[in-house]
Image 1 (cartoon, rainbow, N blue to C red):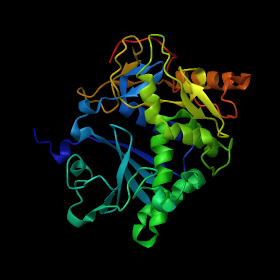
Image 2 (cartoon, rainbow, N blue to C red; image 1 turned 180 degrees about the horizontal axis):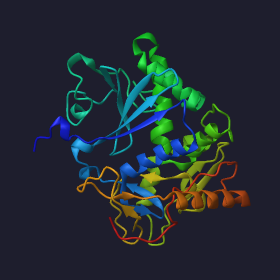
Image 3 (cartoon, helix red, strand yellow; image 1 turned 180 degrees about the vertical axis):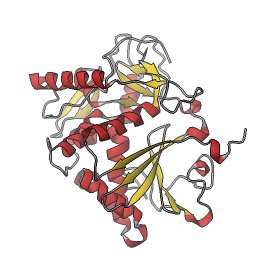
Image 4 (cartoon, rainbow, N blue to C red; image 1 turned 60 degrees about the vertical axis):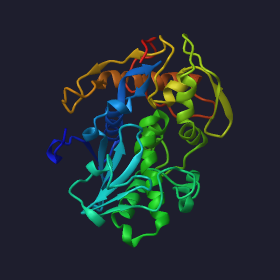
Length: 337
């Protein structure tokens, strides 16, 4: 069935760095999670939707970013994996290497822009590898994050022809971590929130805990696939913020406080999944999966519980931040996907 441009329904969000506060940023990250989550979770950690169930004309999320100088861009995020695939600026759009703007499903993005105004960038969106973000930007451990960095990234991408390719890569590193990685990981969301509220530095570098979580997102899903009926899985080595190693083999409070989403997989061990609380998604489409609900009261209650538990010594060794629990209850054993 042909889908007209008018019938395409990509969820849209906006973030203005000039007037952002904790509630605005948290609401954006929670909305992104809701848009990509299935109805299932693994001991409180949401499982993303099966890509096969995502209709092509609803495949992407569009996040418009605006800075204090009124530069703006619209970033496209894939609902299947939370990867940033490209962005629009005025009457031009740019796609990261590996995403063909003239082939499905990317032809549905920014359909009002045609021909040579749809450009493929010379680098991809991976952190490392040939023709990827590290080729000029270098190690992301040395790239500052925070609203000041995000504002500068918006300006760089808005004025692409006037800046170095290195700056474009840095801009993507900042945006990917402050949107996609923050949606995947509550710990990263909390680092950004702390920079907004003044509980942490306004500009900050990724620590060992952040980088370890980002590097092992796929590995977390893979070991969870091997979980027994009690939710225990083969040990996975992660790092704390000071790069000290530790192993996880179940969803402890610490891991639950860090990880919000895992990539879709079919869990073969019945009983390790359960159905999360859901209401109708806010886009109102009856053929879209119902999405999680998170009332402000429940969200605040769980945030306070997370802070209280970490204040009593339940955080990672070397960790000082208290990520939220996104308003969802702790583990219930669940039916198979």
